[in-house]
Image (cartoon, rainbow over the protein chains, first blue to last red):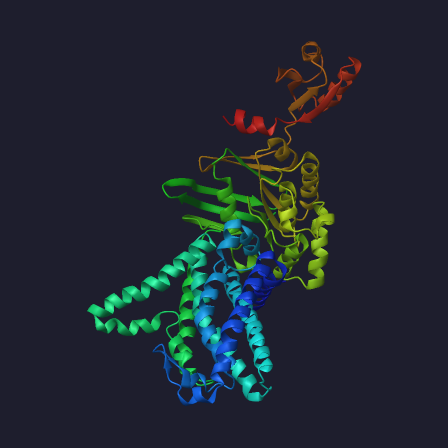
Amino acid sequence: MHLPVWSHIWLLSQIEWQRLFLSRRGWLTLAAFCLLWFLLLRYLVMPLSQWMLDPAIVEGAEMVAGWVDVRQLLLWPRPELSLFWLLALLLTPAAAVLFSAGQICRDRSRGTLRFYSLRVGRDSILLGRFFGQLLVQGTLLLLALLACLLLAFWQGASLSGNLLSAMLFCWLFVMLSLLPFTALMSLMSVWLNSSRAAVSMAVLLLTLLPLLLGILAYYWPQALPAFAWLPGAQIPALINSSPWQPWAELGLPVGQAALLLTLSLLSFRRRAL
Amino acid sequence: MTTVIACSGLSKSFGQKAVLKQLDFKIETGAPVALVGANGAGKTTLLSLLCGYLTPDQGQIQILGQKPGSVKLKGRLGALPQDAQFDPDFSLARQLQWLARLQGMTASKANTETERVLALVDLTAEAGLKVAQLSHGMRKRLAIAQALLGEPELVVLDEPTAGLDPLHAKALRDCIQQHSTHCTFVISSHNLFELEQLCGTVLMLEQGRIRQQATQISETGVLRLQLCQENGQQLLPLLQQVPGFVKSQLLSKLQLELQYDAVRAADFDVRLLQLLHQQSIDYRQLSRGPSLEQQLFQSGG
C-alpha cells in the first residue's frame, strides 16, 4: 500500500490548499487578501490606469522615482495589468513571508506532525507543505488577477489573446519570484518554534543582510555581486520588463529556492518532532 | 515468534542529562509488552526513538527489521504519542481520512477505515465535529483511533488511558486484548493494574537503564486472595489443613498471599475454594502469581 513520494507530496499539498477554504484561519487569510486587493484596485489601480490611458502621458513617459520605467509599463496590453504587475511584485513577497511562516512549526509544536511522520517521510512532509503554500499563493494571486481583469473590462478593455497571454505571464513570473521567499519561510519554520518567530527572523534576515552586504561592499567592492543572491534581487529588473521578456531573470529565484529548500530538508531530517 | 523491536547500545542525552544509557533489549511478537518506570525514567524518550521522532546519540534500533523513520516502515507502525494534538480547525473524520490516504488507502477505503477506528473508540457520533469541540478524553481516544488505522503490525501507546474515564479505559483494554492476536502492542503506563491485565512482558526503566525484563508467567505456587470482609485472621489457621499449604501472608486487611506446593497439590486452588465455601467466607477475587507491583518493586529489590 506504499504510495510513491510524489503522491505523498501531492496529497499533503492538497491538504494545505484545503486549509484555505475549510478553516477559520484560511477564511481570515482569504478575507484579508481580498480586502487588500479591493482597496488597491479601487483606490490605486483604477485612478492610475485611467491616467495612464491619457495619450499625453504616453508622450511624456519617463522614469518614476528613479527606478520604475513608465515606458516599459505602457508596453503592457492594459494599464490595469501593468499596475497589477508592479504592485504584485512589490507586495506579494511580504504576503508570502506572512502566509507561509507556519508551514512546519505550527504542526510541529502541536505534535500533529508526529501523526504524519508515521505515514510519510520527512522530505515528503516538507515538500508537501512547501508546494501546498505555493498552491495557496497561486490561488490567491489568480483571484486578485481575475479581479484586475474585471476592472479592465469595466474600464473598456476587450478580451484578447494578447491580454490573456500577458495575464498568464504576470501570474507565472510573480509566482516564480515568490519561490525564494516561500522556501526561506520553510527554513525559518524548521529552525524556529512559532510563526511569529519565523516572521521576525525572516524580516531581520531580509533587512540586515542587505545592510551588512552594503557595509562589506563599501570596504570591499568585490562583494558587490553578492547582492544578486539576496531573495527578490531580480524584482527591480522584472518591474521594468514587458511581458515574456525577462526569461534571463528566472534562474536566480529558482536557484535561490532550490538552495534554501535543500537547507530546509537537511535541517528537518535532523529536527526532533 | 519474530523480533519486532531490537535495541542495542541505545543512548540518548538532552544536554548534560543522559536519559537513556546503553539499552539492550528485544521484543518479540505476541502479547502486549508493558514499559514502566518513574517519571523521568526515559519511557517517552524511548518511545519517541522507536517512532523516529528523535534520533539516538548512540546505538542501533530495528523496528520490524527497519530503521525508525524508514519509508518501508510507514503504515506498519502505529503510535499514540504523548501530548500530540490534531488540528483543532478540522473535523475528526476529515483528519483521519487524510492520514488513511497518506497511508496508501483509496478514498473509499479511507472512509471505511475511518468509520471503523472511530467506532472502536466510541467516537462515531462525533465524527463531524471539529477537534476543538472535543473534551480531553475524546481527543485522547481520537489519537488512539489514528494509531489503529490500517491495522499496523506494531502499536506503541504512551499513557493510553491517562485522562480516560473508567468506562472508556476498560473499552480500550478490551480493544487492545482483541487486537493483540494480530498486532504487538508496547504500552507505557503508570497504571500497573491495567498493565497486569494486558501485558505478558514488562520492561522496567530506571535511571535510563532497563532494570528488569520480567515475564508474567503464572506462578502456580502463589495465590492472591481478596476477601469481602476482614476475616483473614479467622481463615489463617484453617489454611493449615489444606493439603500442600506452605505459608501465608496478610498483605492488607482484605488481602492474603498464599504459597503452596504446586507439585504435590496442583488442585490447591480448588480445595481453597471448597474451604471458603464450607466456612461461608465470601471472597472478591482469587488470582494466581504475585502482582506486577510485587514483582517490580519487592522481589526485584
